[in-house]
Length: 120
Length: 112
Image 1 (cartoon, rainbow over the protein chains, first blue to last red):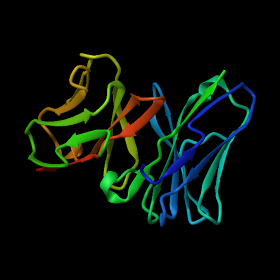
Image 2 (cartoon, one colour; image 1 turned 180 degrees about the vertical axis):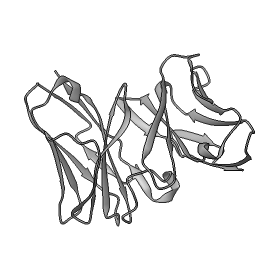
Image 3 (cartoon, chains in turn blue, brown; image 1 turned 45 degrees about the vertical axis):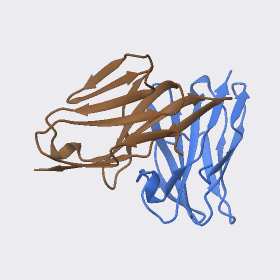
């Protein structure tokens, strides 16, 4: 267990629907990052929050939104889902502001196990 | 213990030298990804391997997947300072359900 909890682990939904993915960061971490991994595109940075505020934005579609709550958990909302939105969605956390990159497992930047979203 | 172990953890090489980074899984690999992060930047997707024995190359970087050994290697030929950064493997490891894991990372420094 990495300490970063993502729920649900699997999600199957129909096109046009809306889903919410949840991430609880590792205890003490203030930054939460969201990534999308599709089969052919690798890991794509979506958005970062630090202590409740949006810190950095990547390739996040307008149909997607996220927020970080006072207890530091974060939710990624995906709406008007399309078949192409099927992917693994990862959350990661780090103690500080950091940057949107990965600094290695031993450097305080921890990934969750992901939510596998299938849109049918 | 880690599902994906990378070795070495860090590597310092002279410019022009060849090097290899390994990623070993404790479980069967179903799809393996290699990423690179330049210091201060985001993750860069390098390549993905799916089939045992598959080998892919991009410029001076070659990756192979040995399914039997549950291992992948990333080989850089004639290293350059631009190759410096952290290399990360990621893999889809099926246990009771599909789960994706990242490796422990390898920090590469190339000395001009």
